[in-house]
Amino acid sequence: KDIQFIYSDYYNKLEVARFDSNVGKFVGYTAAGVKNAEIWNKDTSDIAAMRAQRETYCMNNIGIDYRTA
Picture 1: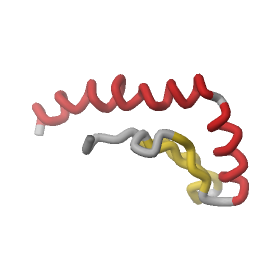
Picture 2 (picture 1 turned 90 degrees about the vertical axis):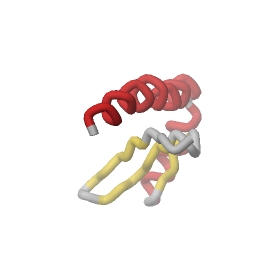
Picture 3 (picture 1 turned 120 degrees about the vertical axis):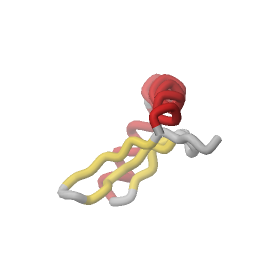
Picture 4 (picture 1 turned 180 degrees about the vertical axis):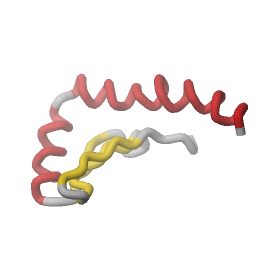
């Protein structure tokens, strides 16, 4: 539960939108980001793929990171 996958979308050094695996959807932080987040959240296959990134990327590498630390 402590491990999360975060994907952030930036424009001009400003975070526009973010996907957080704990929330399970995109969240917009600007007017354009809110619009994009609504569009991206409608694509259920993309949301499922982003949710799976926690398992495929984070959980796979956590063992490697803890062994080297």
